[in-house]
Length: 369
Ligand SMILES: [Mg+2]
Image (tube, rainbow, N blue to C red; front, side):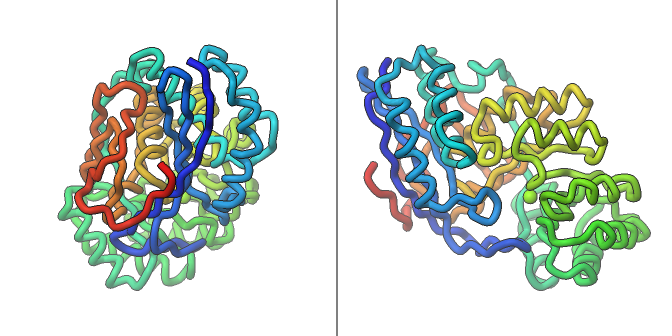
């Protein structure tokens, strides 16, 4: 099975509601689908969404990076998997989402060649998962209403986006918590919005009210490693690192410093599946559990995240893979059924990608498939 061509296609899909965090507002998904074509007619699919404010990539830069890497991959046999991986990662620095999209397509093909679902090829057995859902940042009343709607849809874990105003954040969380049943778990994501000292003050204020979230995610700037350690030493609420950890190297430093309680793995940060698996293994060495998350991205790359979660189910105990459920419609079918909080993996080979109209009428666009 020889890779004869690599193409890209832009997928635009409408969101049910705007996605609002302390870093950005997004009104519609726009992501890049990568298509590997082979001499025997096999096709592999990958995907990634440019998230400039987190990875530094734009749609244009992703396409350019993929075009740059393409000649180092085309013409190679899929059996040369390690060489292809090496060429994806060593010919150009950074560009983690572009590399992730390439890796996902490569793993899809490899699993297809092995006639296995990707998660089975990676040693996974788990096929049922639960994910949280993101509650976008906004007025407290709107956040409460969105939280109650999510609970009505069957979610028992909510990821609350905060971080724009420390005092308001405390009031928001207290009000949201009061509106919900006790059995609903809260995950808080400040997306780098606070200082270390603010974080401690805020979390103490919540803890005083007996509100101990499942975790507080990335309260301080990505490079404020000392800040994370400062917070962890002073609060009861567990601390999860997101933007501070792209690579195994980043994680090792934080884990050795005992600066965090959990690691958030995202394929768009780890440059794909290979390093995501390594990151899970490293965390396990330190006795630290992981969450697998996603950017605001489409069904193929989110599916790849679920396959990774299955492969490392003992270590990746939390899922934040709600991106597909945030879409109003999309044209992609994968081996995964995203049914609000429940995610179910089928036995389709590879990632099971096909382009139909899986969620009814598709009101977005897909180019050049
Ligand atoms: Mg986050």
